[in-house]
Image (cartoon, rainbow, N blue to C red):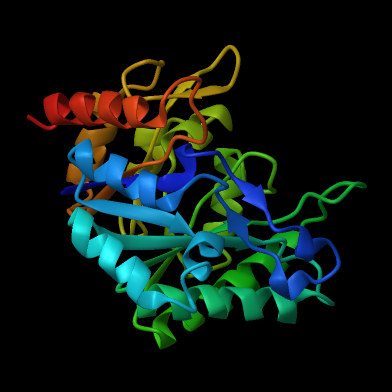
Length: 272
């Protein structure tokens, strides 16, 4: 298994304001400097990086700049993360336009994985039919990824309609998309990350690692919270997953480079 880090820690996730009035142009974006982020990630000893679709799109008109940065740091762009509501039929075509754009960018820069989150919770509650809509949309996403030579995986996430183990089950009985378990989101949603990895052995296409303070739902560098990573890593091996482990820490109170180093030191010890 190879170790990578998500650039999200260098400023946290934001959205593009154009998406308020133009759904097709809405992207995830980290406001921090991606040159610094990638150099810090490489300096911490990681071999790969995951980026948001918006940050990769910033290099669309100057692709050699990102290619040069990846070559300078020795990092592989492993994966591109995007997402959408997926349950509103009228805007779904524009959301899928964005997903297709993310897949095109991922292919351009040599990524292997398209990571997707989403599934909106409506103000008046979640009808079971929204899981049907989400499952169908995720199958379309899987097809888009495959058209671009990518693997697609779904990332259950707090604030979406897929938080709890039961909600995860609803999606994986409705869609063929792969599974990107995120240890902290799964734990915060009431699940046991290792147990969920073992439950869906053939679905695991990508893995996000972060720790959790359950009392405050604060995400932390690896080893600073309550998640049993010994069991998580054992489960990952048991299901035969041998690709990238991506540390994805949404924010950090100090220097993001320090957070990357803390998690890398922890993983080096945990993996022996």
